[in-house]
Image 1 (tube, rainbow, N blue to C red):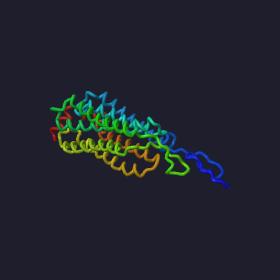
Image 2: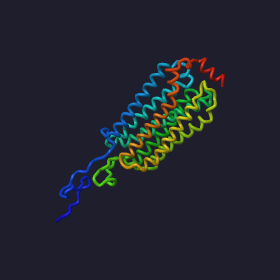
Image 3: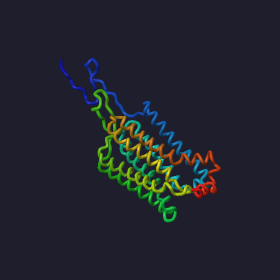
Image 4: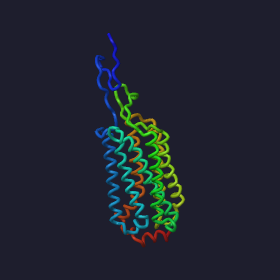
Length: 290
């Protein structure tokens, strides 16, 4: 004859005679979706390591040297970080994973996009005034700006794990709450600014001679990158619970694979399958013909 309200973490049994624990939901390593995303992330990391090995082994060949081998190595390292940071979004949300996931994601992608931006600037400068020191300094400075943004966000309003009971009555959705939408927007906006700047500079440099020109590949890769993250925003906002994390992981993996394939696929094809085109004479011949 009496009604007793169940605690927040419990739900009424079907017979309505006692309280049972609510099911806990998050993007787990044991879910099919979590397994697929984890395997894809590890595959991307493996492919980056393979491409890096190919470039190191063939580092003295013309196609590697003509396209700034040092920045290529930095770019492959940053892409590996991008693939690995997606693993922080999978598993039970904890204090340290909530704090690290967006900071690691933001810094990794800025390091990646800043390498691409410097590559484009080198193409436009034709190696005359943009030397190795300037290249390293520019990448370091652009990455430090993002690190400062992430630090300010974590200090002012750090993301925290949260038990959400609003989506389902019988489930508890574990998620990381982005306490400051402004901080997340600034983090994404800075990455987008660098990507758009890289695209514009690469588009301007697309018709320069092929012997040192990566501008066409960069233009295509930036189109893929921007398209993925423009589609990410509405999908992320409209996805509840663990699917919001899955959407963000998918965007990270899709954009990382897009950059890896667009920038390094044609070069690996020439290095491995068309070695006759990987000669100084062949590269200079394309430039003279053009």
